[in-house]
View 1 (spheres, rainbow, N blue to C red):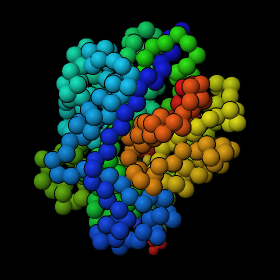
View 2 (view 1 turned 90 degrees about the vertical axis):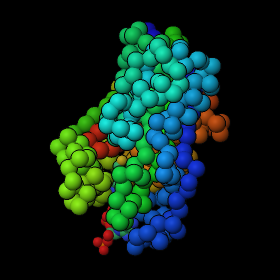
View 3 (view 1 turned 135 degrees about the horizontal axis):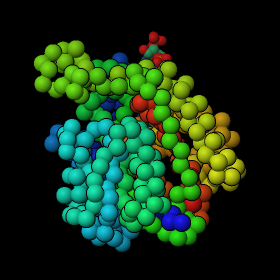
Length: 327
Ligand SMILES: CC(C)(COP(=O)(O)OP(=O)(O)OC[C@H]1O[C@@H](n2cnc3c(N)ncnc32)[C@H](O)[C@@H]1OP(=O)(O)O)[C@@H](O)C(=O)NCCC(=O)NCCS
């Protein structure tokens, strides 16, 4: 059986940094509130003229180079995002054009903060069924363009960025061992952006006044479901694959809120030293949070050959999922 193995990682964030002190000048908030309630100290934010597809291309280019592959070697490009340059065409097509990946089929995946994990899940299925040998999976977001900068309950949370991996078909024991994706559309109104889609299109002049093309979130409700959903799906995946929490070398949960990360780690009984966190520096980068974290861990030497790596994420939909891989 073919396995999908990560053979290259990359990440890119905008140069501009927005600190909690900067946010104190925009809304009625404080560094103390943001730090204690979320764990975030600063986040990277795109400047005017910066494009999402360019961030994705930079991350993808790094991942390809580290994989020692040429753009033409890619069979498929999947981009998990809800903030593409345009509603259509797909960002994956723009990345294909920028890279010169002329042989790749391209598609975007809309699964909010879980977009990257949904990408791994689908790429793994394609590689296992011999439909592709080399797949680029990108997770990225520039939610700063959708944030209501007068709403203190959401504007302090999000940051921009993109991360990428190249998955390659191998025959060995290394690679994705299993993945489980879940969703519950009954919670669709927990995190959403009501404007800009076909229901209330961008050419509907009244929607700005009604504040529709902005992120709306029920923070408390989302928090509770997030902890239980991520812990449950991860425990189910571990059981399905015949592993226990003690065997995990590194746990990388979606970086949405430090309290959520700690609660999920505790529920799964994973030792705090094995739970990765970089939320302090990036905020919630949605679909980018796990591939940025993976790239950081690789570059810092935190991941070693043969390590068992566990990933989990949660986001608007609601959707959630978990991926287990042997590095
Ligand atoms: C958003 C979140 C940080 C809010 O934290 P919380 O502890 O639940 O805070 P609450 O919403 O209960 O608000 C508590 C108080 O802080 C206030 N508050 C909210 N944002 C604030 C801010 N940035 N600065 C200061 N005060 C703030 C509220 O108005 C409220 O005031 P009140 O008690 O006078 O009404 C938290 O609910 C969360 O992280 N939820 C999950 C969201 C998420 O991860 N979404 C993305 C999923 S991918």
